[in-house]
Image (tube, rainbow over all chains, first blue to last red; front, side, top):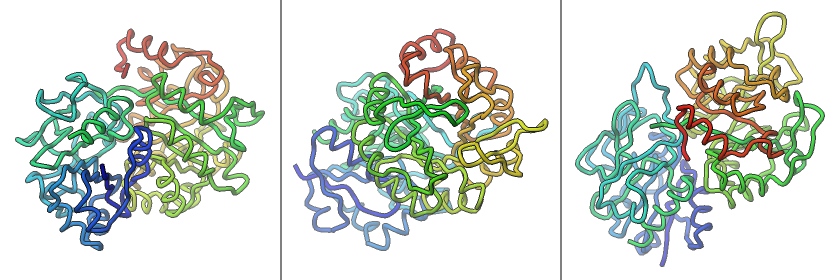
Length: 195
Length: 251
């Protein structure tokens, strides 16, 4: 199986690479269009700020390529947000795979960003949660969120319920960092690779 | 529900984990890679890896060691020590760090916080504040706690938040190494004034101290080193104890 990790400056890909190393899966870290198109699985990771990340993707034409991919794609954290239509983070137009808005958390009582381990409740038919409990703890670090919508496949609650996972066609996404979410996160990645 | 975090800290000097009292008199506490992996298995929520000599010796953090730690743990970890530029941060994130912690360089050049937050996102930028009570006020210290600044701790905490810090790692130099409990009053003041998470550090000596820092101290995370390194408290026992007292924990 060929696994490609999308290469762009704003992402913290090392954690994803180490997660794949730990489960013994080889991968290619690349921004090459041909390799990304023919890979069996594509992982689109990210840590960062939306407008900077989109600028890096545009430089390489990846903003046009990624939405056209046909194989299973797993986007995490900022990767998930960049697949949405628009983000309130510096008023950024994103790739629009998921027809939803990314909003900023607003709370007078709870701290922002939402940092730490929180529990998610997954839909029963969510294939990435195969073999896991209906409720699992995973690791979040984010100030922006996707509201619950018809594409939501797992919900987390902070300030209000929000999308912990999204799914549409071949695009799977997690707001949390599966790559550093302990054994639960590892199983989610393994489930994605088994799709 | 979002849980409170238990964070073992690996203070690194010459590639070994060390723990001193009030940041001097360092004692060897083992291999940081082994310790990091062990803590992850035992239920640590996160790790902090601080190259405590980096600022003083003007050395960069030990990037290879960061890689090795990352290769063996599946929980988030933060790297600090000697970070003073966008390039430094980029290198550490690429080596496997999930977040970075800056301290002296933020005091010297507060604009660095804004620049890092814009480049990498606030969520991976922790500003560490070493504080000590001197002449009736809490003052920011740098250089591993050796050097007093002209900056007061409470307004500085607000400033770093406004500039884009994602979390604050607040270390009380008065409490550090004493095992007499965290600086709960100061931690509570900083936490109440702040909309970003506060990691309390310095003074942990018992399980009750963690309970106190999460209740009285209003901390979002509790960090300790020696009590974990020297196996005085097992992480799982601590988390079970805190959960039994009603503190939300990932177990």
